[in-house]
Length: 385
Image (cartoon, rainbow, N blue to C red):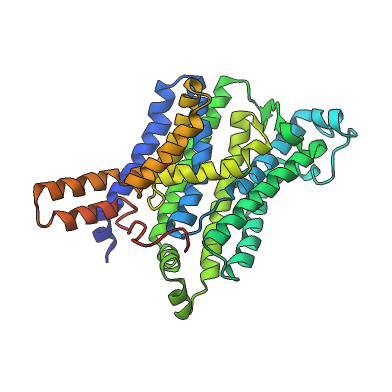
């Protein structure tokens, strides 16, 4: 199929229009219409949406229920927080909490984070290497489904417990906070806060565009094949473990980058942000938005985060029940997520109108709502693959 023919299809056009519209809203409309406080909240939501983009690739396309993304989010966040604390302390200085809880010396494994370049490299490399090692160890042994989900969730729980027990080096339960600067820029300056928002928005849009290309590439087709018929793919001579590990590594790196930007935007990182509950919250947002779609995980993550902030202000004791009810309603009545709502409405109209071709047309339109005409999660495909 020629490039011109592919561009003429409604799927790719609609996808790029959607990405372009999102860019206009995030880079133009939101900064012009929202106060600095609300823009800061949106920047926080965008960081969480970065994690959701990776989950959409690994879970929605690869069938891997990643319940431990808080680990990679936390790694990126703590690496950035370490650099910011060392930067605030000055050359050769000691972070304030180490004087209070420790012996007043900086551990040797903290020292590399004095360099901005080293910190940025570690934020990408360390989570990627951890995901690579874990992925190869797990997927080569054909661990999948609920077993993989439980394993990844246990890893998140263990990571949070480890952080809590390291009060002298990671701040313990309190975490790391009180950052004053970000690569030389004053974090209290409203102009710099807006700069962080634009940085988060651009990074998120770039991630979405990258995932779109991956989904439409041969790798994306192989990932779906592994999700649906892993044994058949292995019979054809491919290594499903490598394909799944690659998607898992990409999701881990996206989560780490989101965590690294989360720290200067929010101003704190603690074990409460990286444990089991936050990891499950990531999954809930992706499921509500539409895990098999391109923009669905982003929409779901932002919507759930916004709802949490808004409803918790009015109903602080009942927000968790609202979240659970929302998750149940969407899964029960719209299993494809919010992003497939348009396709479901068109199919319903076609059936009500009595159009003989309506069912097929609606199904095709609903399919293109996923990603450029790609199939949503097929019938019978669940988290066990």
